[in-house]
Length: 392
Image 1: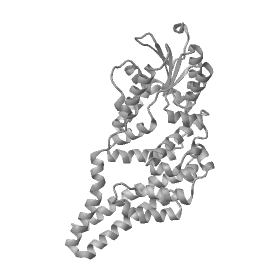
Image 2: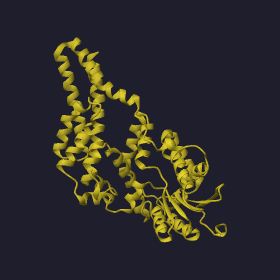
Image 3: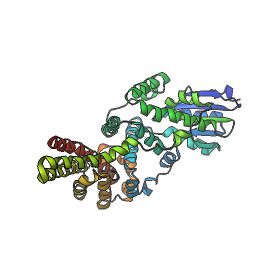
Image 4: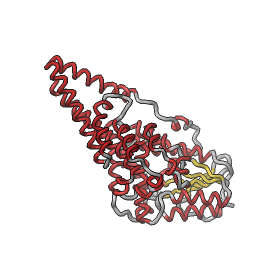
């Protein structure tokens, strides 16, 4: 029956060996045409199940408008999730600005699929991997240099103001063009492509293939379609892709190498110039790490007490492998200027503009964490170099 139904050009049909049929709707995430394609496909097929490229957390964020209201900013910092939340907000900001220019809500095609499920009675399957696992696996795969580059890319996303033509977004639905874009992306960050795209292709395919019923519609980004088709009936396990990455031994060693190296330099300085030399080295460490961490907090327009806390805390936290100056600054900022319920509710609107991003108290807390940490890390490198030069 479904074989004779006229479907949009964005739909790819795959007949599985067990007699079930999967219809993949390849979408652009800020495309009015994609919304229409999703609506038309589900209306024509009336499938047993609809799979969407969402995890429970992203589904909740998109469908529950009061989700931000319940966020506990203190818990976010204590659980070391501030950087990941900031990354999500930056990416959301980028998509929202595109959506504002095109008149389409980011993820509108996913929301349309959810609405169609409610109207038709089809089973809804949240087929994507949890976003926190994805971000942590991506981050863990990066070298130190690539982490710096990726941070710069994310922060630069706040400043993006270019007008994006609707036709360009629709052109990106062409598989060849999109795959060529991903190929360029892979050249810059090959590990990201594997963990951000390839692993999720396998997870999406496993969850789509396991959806209930004989007729299944899956709404996914067009870039995932080729990978899902390759993995739909693959026999390999995806359990390893659903685990948090193991802690890097190198990273753990580096954390302890800083305090040990600092102590070694102080001892070397003592043998070279006595107590005065060692004390001066300690002053250099304190002044440089404190000043640059405070500068990072100031760049986030932090409260004066927060800037002072970063200045005082940086010399200690940069030597402690389990504490970061940004966490200290973020907690102080959240204490002296606690985001209100209205601030949290306004997060989706605030991140749409550079001014809003910088002035929303909740965003500012996250920026303090990120920029103070960057400043403290730079201070550690600069002061360590100065102390090394004068101690050798």
